[in-house]
Image (cartoon, rainbow, N blue to C red):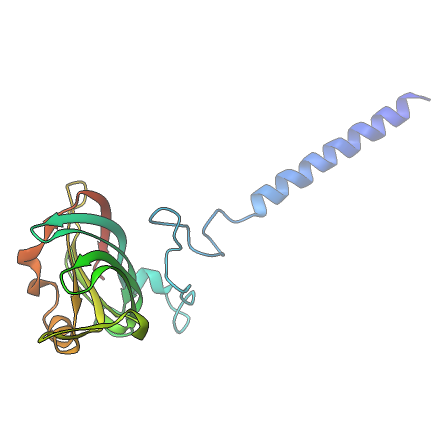
Amino acid sequence: MRVVPKLVAAAVASALALLTAAAVVAAPPAGVGGPPLPVGGGKPAFAGGPPPGVGGGQPMFLTSDRVFGSGTVTDAFGTASGTVDAYADPDGSNPRGTVTMTATFAHGGDRTLVGDVSQGCVVVDGNLALVVGRIPEDQQWTVPVFGTVEYAAATVEDNGASLDRAYFVALRESSKQTACATGPSLYVSRLQPLDSGNFTVIDN
């Protein structure tokens, strides 16, 4: 009669194993049915977490122009670093995200600027992208003759497995309007190879 408990225990263990296997099969893979997989060193795939889709169509991240990554460059004026996590509709509308730059300014000293791209622009052209964001008032400052610095901007070139290039600059209002109207070609001659980092540009 002692054989019966052993059979019951074996049956219970077998049933639990089947339930566990079924749970594993039923569970969706990472990134499916939940938030996007992290990109760019653990950052969320979208700044601010975009809605999963528009009008019941494809998810936004499959149809948007995207720019993300970070890097450091050195030129005749010194070293600057920047981080970009931004996206927009293919026609450039509905820009979202952030652009951050850290540099030493001749008239302003060492500063870190964090720009809100929804008040700027995202212009993507092939492997080139321009991202502009408005910095908060407490980060703005006025330079004689130049005017008030209100925007942070990054122009990046995604060269795939080869070395990417970038250029970071602070802009006044009139310069921002020119940059957003012209796109990345405005600063392409000033691009510098990255000392470190990587950028990804997706043109949809």
